[in-house]
Length: 94
Image (cartoon, rainbow, N blue to C red):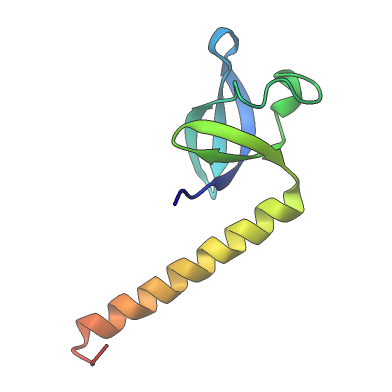
């Protein structure tokens, strides 16, 4: 199973290699846009758009609604994991 994470493209960093910087909940990293550069507006059209990424590659462009719904689900998973971890630390049965 793989997990695609939504991120917003904030800048192109290397046109020749189709590389860009994306923001995921305030954390920025560089990824390849090679798989999505052929979409509307080409490489320049990706800036400001949301992409679904996995292991350093944008797999597809997504709309903001889908991106926010996915980020909300990931936040909920994190909250559940934090509660589970807290229960484990208190010695309560799992």
